[in-house]
Length: 241
Ligand SMILES: [Zn+2]
Image (tube, rainbow, N blue to C red):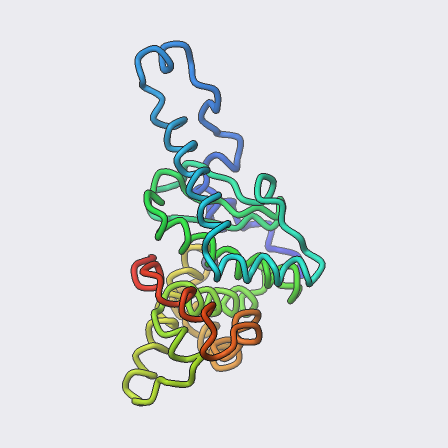
């Protein structure tokens, strides 16, 4: 169904990514910036781009997603599909389906952990958009991909879940609650026109199906492999917001 004409760009959170909407800050430093070192934006961008390269080459979970995308017919060219930009301070990353680009927020992702968290989160959206034919305008679809992103990038028990070692019901419930909360917040961020009740109801409607869908991680990481350990012991799984 077509989006309501009345929805404004702000309703979709585009204002969180000013550089997406033609309000970009100059990419080339001015002479005075070069001479007097005032190029904060340029230096943030360079640092961010270096971190992106490091993360993409070194993080097993990121590599796993890139392999999964490639083998599903959606290959990624790092330079083309992952970009560093200035964003609103409330976000660390975003996915732009129109451009099929992941935005890493250079002003808020100032460590490898944050860059990794942002990239993994947005790779889930990219994967769902390409492989699962996600429709961002469908609230249930949006809730589902945010549940999956929270599950794989934010809340800290992915490794335990994959290994089947989360035993205590209380821990399980705590993890599910974490994913639910994060997903709800992301839905509200992405669609401001959606009310508290609508967002909550959408997350609840699709929760069990999407919470248990660990594709491509669940299928590809085997219990006890080094990949699981490396991918899941990373601090970003705890600290990313
Ligand atoms: Zn998201």
